Length: 213
Ligand code: AP5
Image 1 (tube, rainbow, N blue to C red):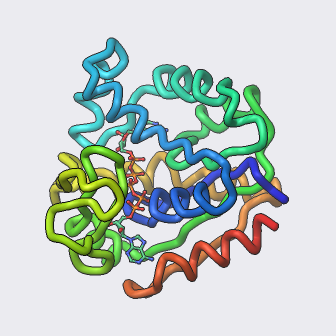
Image 2 (image 1 turned 120 degrees about the vertical axis):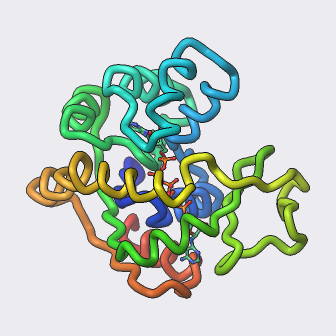
C-alpha cells in the first residue's frame, strides 16, 4: 500500500474533497498547508500575520515559511504510517526540501479544466468549525448555511472571489505545474482526469484508493 502521497492539482481540483474522504477510509492524515496557514492567520500567530497578505491576494506564501510549517506537521506521531499532502509542494524549491524530509511513494495529479474550476470555486462553501467542504451546486448541505457533520456555520473563503481565483490559477500554471514533470520523470505520478462537473466524489476516491493499493 502506498501511503506517502502527494495530491497535485490546480485550486479547486478537489484535493481537499478527496483527501478528507480518503483520510476517513484509510485512517491516514490529510495535511493541507492551506488549512494550516488559514489556522495560523485566524490565531494571529507570527507566521499567520506574515502569510495573510499572500493568501488574501492568491499568491504563494514564501517557501521558507511553508517548509517550516510542513516539517513541524510531518514530525507528529500520526504521520508515522503515512499521510496525504494536499497543497504541498507547490514549487520546485518546496519539492526539493520535501526530498530531504521524507520519502514519497505516489503523486496523484488531478487534471481539471479551468471552466470547471471557476464554477466550483465560486460556489464552494466551507464549515467554519470543522472545515468540511460543500458546494452550492454539486454538493449542497442538507440544511442551507449549516454543516451536515457538526452543525457549524458555512462561509465562503476570502480567496474564492472571482479576481483572486484567476490569480491563483495563474500562479498554479507558472509556479506549480512544473512539478508534474518533476514527479513524472521519477515514475511515481499518476494522472486522474476529472473533466465532468457531476462526477460523484466517491467515484474519484475509489479510483485513487485502487491506485494506492
Ligand atoms: P489551498 O487551501 O491549498 O488552496 P488551493 O490549492 O487553491 O486548493 P483549494 O483548497 O482551493 O482547492 P481543492 O483542490 O482542495 O478543491 P476542493 O476539494 O475544495 O491554498 C490557499 C492559499 O494558501 C494559496 O493560494 C497560498 O496563498 C497558500 N498556500 C497553501 N499551500 C502553500 C504552499 N505549499 N506554498 C505556498 N503557499 C501556499 O474542491 C473545490 C470545490 O469543488 C468544492 O466546493 C467541492 O465541494 C467541489 N468538488 C470537488 N470535487 C467534486 C466532485 N467530484 N463533485 C462535485 N463537487 C466537487
